[in-house]
Length: 110
Length: 114
Image (cartoon, rainbow over all chains, first blue to last red; front, side, top):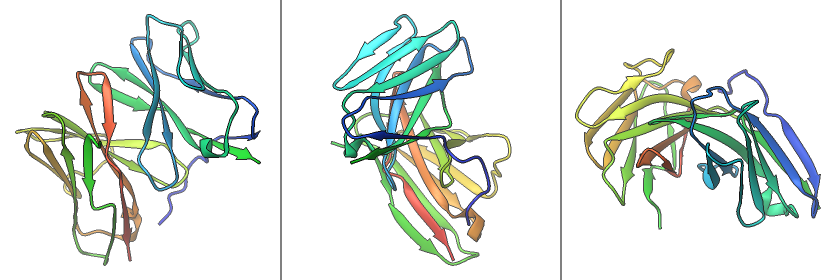
C-alpha cells in the first residue's frame, strides 16, 4: 500500500523557460555531489556531478552550483523541454556513503 | 550499456510469499552494493548496505529478518522480501559505487503484493 509521508516539492515551468531546482545538504564533510533524474517507474539516472573544490559545473543544458557556506546545491536546466519532466534528486557523498535529498518533481507545461 | 542489472523489473506476488530481487554489477567487481526503497512521491530511502562475504548493514528501522540480503559474490547481491505483505509493495532499487565516487543504479523492481 501507499505510505503516508511528505509529498515532494513540485516545480512547474513553461516549455522553453529555465528551471532551477534547489537542494540543501546536511553534512559539511560531504565532498562530492550528484544530481539524478528519475522518470516515472525507472531507476534514477545520473545527470551531473560536482566536487567540493568547485562551485560551478556545466553540462549540456544543465548547470550545477554549489554553495558550501550555506550547504546548498542547485540544478539549472536551460530551455526546459517536456522530456525533462521527472523527479530530480540531489545526493551527497561522504566516503562510501551516499545520501539522497527529498527530490523535486519538475513538470513542464507545453 | 548498463553497468548494473536488476531483475525482475516487475513482480506481483501473493501475501505471505517471498520474493527475491537480484542486482548484478556487470562491469566491475563490487564489494559493496546498496539497496534502496522508494515509496510513491518520496525520495529513495537507503535500506541496507550489502557487503560481499559478510553480513549486510541495515539502516535503523529496517527489519533484517524481513529483508534478507545476500552478497555471495563480487558481482551479485540479492534482496529477499520474506513473507511479503501489501505494505511491502514498493519500488526497490540497488546501486553500486565505483571508486567511492561514481554511482550506478539498477533499473528498479516494482513489487506489488496482493
